[in-house]
Amino acid sequence: MTKMIMHGCNGRMGRAIVELTLSDPDIEVVAGVDAYGENNYDFPVFDSLDKCDVQADVVVDFSNASAVEGLLKACSEKKLPVVLCTTGLSDEQLELMKNTSRDIAVLKSANMSVGINTLLKVLSEISPMLAAAGFDIEIVEKHHNQKLDSPSGTALALADSINDSLEEKYDYVYDRSTRREKRPKKEIGISAVRGGTIVGDHDVIFAGTDEVITLSHRAYSRTVFGKGAIEAAKFLSGKGSGMYDMSDVIK
Image (cartoon, rainbow, N blue to C red):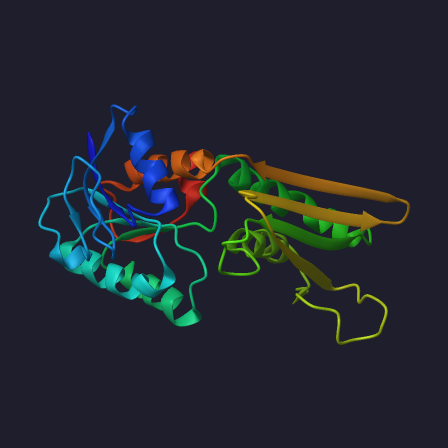
């Protein structure tokens, strides 16, 4: 059985993941970490990972970008693999993550759902053909009104999957309000909607002459992300140092 530490255990996703593990015989949450220290669980909760003295196989992180540096440092010191699910990381934090992966296994994904990661694969296959045929590419993402980062990490991952498959790279455009010109061909527009309790909607739009192809993913609950994070934790337990992503888990 995989023994897991839930980093950010009192957040929305942290609580959802803990609940999901209760019905999974192959994984157990043995400790939690949360800055607020509140404990409504049967396992101990610490306000930082470096204070946690419970033995575990892996850490799953759904916390806040401000906690990532401390998390990575503690995981490196304890030689604990980490599933890093927090979004909105800076370039410096991403570089720290890569450096940390030289010492421990790090799995980073902008989105933990199987559906989104399948969509990433599909986009890498079809985008070169549609771009060559002259289709314009737009991404529209929608999330709840409490989400801090914009655009979402998932929207950027979708754009990267498209761009990495193209011979000529496209520019990302987040705001067209300051310009008055026709749409350049080699750009990917990324638009963000924030409102209500939307868990996560992503539409990738390929707009051609007289036809439009839209690939969509709708998350109706946080459960889809939690299930993916749990599978990632079980996969990463015992793995050697290096960078991993969800494509390694679902292949």
